[in-house]
Length: 404
Image (tube, rainbow, N blue to C red; front, side, top):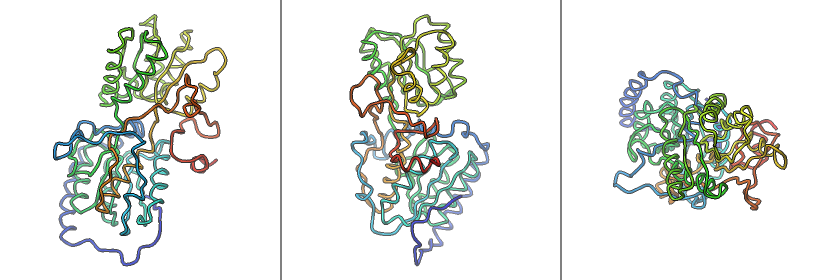
């Protein structure tokens, strides 16, 4: 565990004994729930699973039956608008912080916290893929006096008792979700996530445009049983149903969001289908495997819609203006979603309302067919291949993060 200190707080409050007693009881329940899970159960997908994250079914409605607010990044507010006057401590319980998506998201949340004068300390923990450590981290943040905690819940449902205990102790928990269950208002105050159906519609509408309303398309999904890929595919079908010349001929096809498996899966699809006019993939990092499969099969590359990934952008840039070029559109890989998650938790801790949406519909981030310079395909060869250029960190911060 590492600490990011803002300033030292004099006269730190002590937790009431009755709250400590209740917390200890619930901690025991959390430990019991965690014993049924093996360590590292979500480490393999790391940022991908939570980054594609899903409290979709659990956050479908508030306890009063109201649907969660849906909006775009244009609806975001400044943290100054929801930051209170009383000093608070923020905790970040990261389930697996080893990949670039998580490193960027940590820097995003620490930068955002630095804009709220009331936040005196940000305590970051990394469970390193361990379910037991993830539970312990949440409990530890409560005992260290966190007023608000942002959870990236790779350990899944085993975290619910610890989150519930934190909420009952008066700590405001927000969730950058995976599909872990739990109850809004009881186990967390907000679950912030991007709309998978909207992503599917955005990709499909671009594909209709670039293929001029006629083409056979395949959809490359993620891990077996993940809830995001089918919802994204439903958004694709919704658009294609309005465009009878478009067909989704396969998908979502499981790839485990892995480059090598994506190449194998795509090779099989190319063998089965003599005509494939477009590829939609819900993870830009593994889409490199699809490119390799087309080239190995001697087939020309086709338009691709996915989310942004530095290596993919650099691959497109290297081909621009010569044979082997392909059209590319992406939505953001959204490591910045931790920022509204933080703002919701901080607002709750301050007793304020945060008007921001919790369900985010993402616009296109890159579009190689557009003349709008803001949608140009991006590549930064000074950064690692798995860097996320749609981050809200500026170039200097991103370079510093990756040792540039």
